[in-house]
Length: 443
Length: 99
Image (cartoon, rainbow over all chains, first blue to last red; front, top):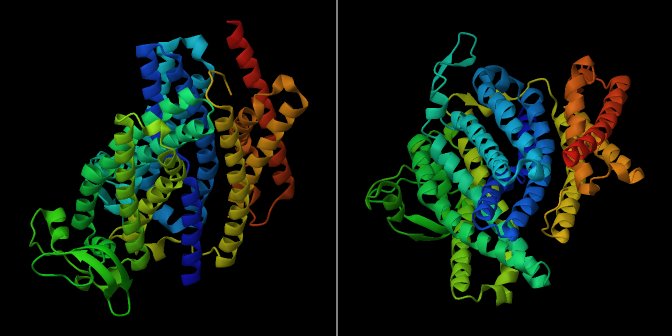
């Protein structure tokens, strides 16, 4: 049973990690495309329109890969997590179906119109189609987050005699206090990724002395949006999210922060340290006293519950991974704010486009927002353990009892092979598009 | 769980079909990127459309063993669906241009 649970979790972790590479870009990029198109409508300067069309091509490739890699997850609910689907399908089925029916079709239909219909529709309608693509992609994120919010903090449900969960109050799904902070944090993080991608393509063009005018526009836009979104990820959205974790999942919060024992008189914030699970302490730590209490409760002396306050069976089952994921995510977020602030300063001093070391740095930092986003999701999902639905349904109960671990491992290897091919195809398509550069043509 | 792999293989066959059409007939080419993207959606659309006739990966694996006849039919539908999607979009593009 343990082997089976391990391989089921590993397979889902692998497929969803690969999948989330794509939507995290499209959600943020759709907003930037709307910005470029809006600027074109206001100024009638062609480079803004070219930028909107160019990034819609990048969007289309990412969206398509997101669709393909999303298909296995739809199947996995039934194949690997049949018990979970059976028990909670009456609730999570609502938001997942709405995501497929409304957001996906809104996004895909208007994406085609945006790419093919510029001349047919005129500029204002073309802007509107871009806006509807943005609306579809953000609505999709909202509905997925609504599903996840219910798993993190279940509300508005009723348990039937046969053990199944059903909705008692539909609107409660959307009034869940977990939802809005998680959604805003996720969307801002997605905007960080897309801003870095836009800025790095700009830096690449400037360094290569190709499409330099567009490169400057991309870099400038990426840096401005990147700075704003990097700040918003940390505050207020990240802060709001963390306050929810401490309120609704205190054991996860203690694991994320590495608090093994409750400290009376205020909790320290750990900057660096290694969880020692045998001695239940952090090794080689560097910490600042009382700061965590202040950040969490605005009170320097407030006690924060440590892991010693909870039953062993209710603790997340991989505390070191949760701790490291959280600390690396926060560390990367801090680097992003610093880099974007520095780039903004260089832009203000009109030195950004000529500063080669900074351009190289911006270009090569592009994988890191992806890593930070994925680590953010690891924190959310590892923190919820050992539950699938926090406090209600344990992960070990949700797996399909009849699927063997060998079968799961075999298909996992199959996914790895097919995803390698898809990944290769994705890199070729994106590489070709970037190499062609922005020009107002159709794909 | 094999059904998931079948679904992904089916899409890959669709991508190959759309690109083969573009390669052999320039008239039906949107470029490698365009044909690939259209191939993905054409394949998914036609498998979903005809899935209930027995081409759905879940039906292919209903007996817990691969039904190879249905599997080949699935791949063929995906291949032809992708080609048809490219063909239809080219028609649509011409209609828009002539408006």
